[in-house]
Structures are given as structure tokens and as C-alpha cells.
Length: 410
Image (cartoon, rainbow, N blue to C red; front, side):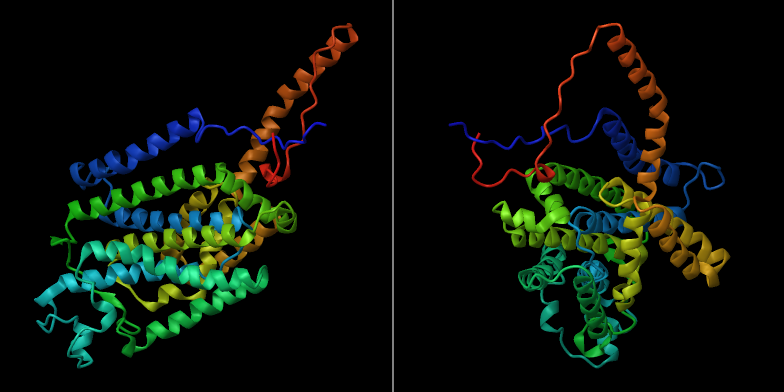
């Protein structure tokens, strides 16, 4: 009696040859080309990269990390979150607390306490500011705080099998509640003004050109690192199970897998990525306030992923650059029309480009290849007519998203 076996698709390389070429070009552009154009090329030159451009691209790269995180949870797992703006802001607040402590007595009130605490007549730091003067502790909190909150929320939400639009609404409500909490002065997060007027990081002035380029390069390296990590994760067995959950969660359960652990893990990873993006965002922009938790910001993250193309990894990054680049121009040229443009863009993508920009490019490439495929098929037909039939092997249909049922033996 023969045993049945599930044939898994072979695992390909992390990136193709062209993919690695593009990756290293981006790496060189971030770590070498941009610093040279900003620091060494004279300001009057057409090749000079201005400080404004450095800050803008650095900010958009932080947004691109959030879009990549959204792709993992929405594009590959099928869970639309409208609360990722909260995780982004939490990471930003963790970094902002450290930067506020770095001001020291250089504030307006010449006190060891942040200026807003002196203004509110606070005498000591609140308990949650205990480790804010340690850079190492801050790095831990940037990961731990969004991750822990995501874990607690996700555990109860996924265990209750909340999904679809209900999950989206609950995450949006959670983010709105957090925004209202951070607006309150007594919480110790600066109220509606938030944190600003940063001066140093690790004792180094934050406004120097060298520090700005260091933060820029660090943000680019983080984005590229998260991209490689996401590529590896999606190509693993874990990633195949995520895609199977997206396509048919019930069948995954019948195959012997518990979706709770998989959904909870990718949810926490996605939240941590947004927290890291927020921490990199704050020192480059120079401010963090509860407005970063607004519902509109979380919706924009989903729009970036949709415009670029879900379940592509590179698509959301492209979408973040296109949408925010257009936003930067439109809010200056036509500020009253920006929101109309954003809404029209989302509707147009939903109706006419369900696979986003990357999906459209792939369709064009497939059409370009169609004539050559047609000629190959014509040669095949002629060979059959001449009595020389080429060998053909019918491909074995793969299992559900490449998932091997538990207990299957080779």
C-alpha cells in the first residue's frame, strides 16, 4: 500500500539576479550617492541634494516601512488593519521621550524636566519615563511597546475569530482611543503639542548635516533590511501558510494548522516594523504628537499598499513614494485639493487597478511576451504536424498555497 505525499514547490532564491542588482543599486544610492550629493556637491550645482530633499526622502522611507508592514498583514494574510498608525506613533513616542531627556537644561525653563512638565507644574518624572534617559532601553522599548500591545490585542481578537470589516473597525477604534488618551496632559506625553525642539541624540547635535545624513542612511538600510526579511519570510513555510490563511482559512484548519499562532505572529511583526519606522521618523522630522494616530494616517498606509500592489512587497514601497511624493507637491501647489486627489486615487485603484501599479506593469510585460510565446506555440504545432511531437509532462497541481498537511509522509 503506497503512502500519499504532498509535493511542496521548490524554494527559489531570495532574489533573482536582476533583483540583487536593483537591491545593491539602492544600497549604494542610500549609503554613498545621497551623502555625496548632499555634503560634497556644492549647493549651487544641479546635482546637489538639498537638506529639504534629504528630510523628505528620509520621511518617505519611514512611510515605506509602514507600507511594507501593511503588505505582510493585508496583502499576504488578508487582514486589513486600520490601526497601524498607532504602532507607528508609539515607536515615535518612545524615541521622542529619549530625545526630550537629551535636551537637559537647554530648554526654555533650564530644568532637568521637559518644558511641558515644568509648564504643568510637575515636580518629578512619571513612572513610564523611568528608562527614557537610556538609549539602549529606548531601543528595547521601541520594539517591546508596539509588539506587546499588538500581542495582547491580537490574541483576544484572533482567538475570538474577529475578521474582515469588523477587525478593521475595531483596530480603527483602538487607534482613535489611543489618540484621545495621548491628547490628555495628565498622561505625560505632551498633550496636543507632543514632543518637539529636539537638540541631541547620543550627545551629538541632531541638526548637523552629518547627523541628518546618518539618520537618512540608517533609515534606508532599515528599509532594505526589512524588505529582505519580508522576502525570506514570505518564501518560507510560514509565509506559505499565511497565504493559505488568506485564501482559505477553513481549509488550513482542516489541514491540521491553527491559524491563531500564524496570524498573531505576523500581526506582532508588522506592528514592530511600524514602531521602528516611527522611531526613525521622529528625529528626522523633529516632532511627534497624537495627530500621528489619526484614522486618516492609518487609512493612508493601506492606500500606499493598494496603489503599489498588494502581495508584492516592492509594490507598497513604490506606492508610498508615489503617493507621498504627490502629496508633498500637491499640498504646496493645490492644498485644498489634496484630500480629493487622495480619495479619487483610492477609488480609481480599487476599480481599475486591483493589483496596483506593480500588477499593471506585470500585465504589460506579459502582453509583451505574448507574441514570442505565440511564435513558440506555432513552431510546436508545426513539429506535431511533421510527426515530431515534443515531450510534454503535465505539471502536478500544487497543494493549497504550498502547504503540506500535517501528518503527511513522504
